[in-house]
Length: 295
Picture 1 (cartoon, rainbow, N blue to C red):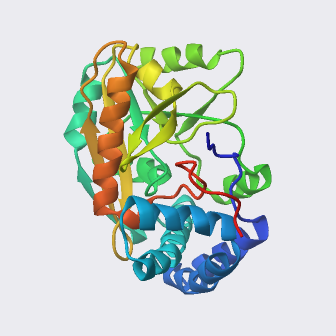
Picture 2 (cartoon, helix red, strand yellow; picture 1 turned 90 degrees about the vertical axis):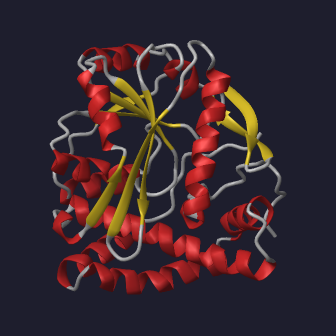
């Protein structure tokens, strides 16, 4: 089975260069530099090229030429979301606009005072959601359930240049103590957010068809969400043209203790969002476990 190795591309120097241009020339200047970065990835990162090309060619059914061009456009779009995240974190939120589709779902969820589970994916730019949600008087705290595998030097640098975030992190631990942290957050009427599309070695998994081919998903988010007896909402923050974002929320129908049904609902939701935003699938590894070594 294929799995993500927990490693993200990029260096602190690269981030510093983009931050310099963002602050001194503007976001769009960083977008221009991004063409060269995306070209480098397109030409030299064979393993991720192979993986994302498979997505466009085999799973979406693109022609050879369209799939090839979409690989470059995918890198460029991904880079834009990173630049946007850095810009907003650095205090430039007023340069961006948004449209919210489904805010009433989250408001109703919090009115029930029982907390709730959000499940997202590595599509779009969910990490900037709090900056838009805060403007519509939606007072809450998000607890992001994650692993502590990101490059620590990049994390430290981004924390230095960013405004203090209201997002709290619940780190997945071998002793399962994160389950108590999740329950505590829900008791405080807070939201707990998972990403449901990446799993790691040694973690329980579930298999289900995704975009017409069987893929493997982490079981944890769906096991936990189907047993907590709290509302479950699928959420995405998708980049539109220029500096505009579309925030989308859809409540899931949850059958108690039926994690497979919740997974199927999640897959249908991700497929729906990818139909609208095909370039914003940002899993650059052998997601369907169909590829050999990159040549």
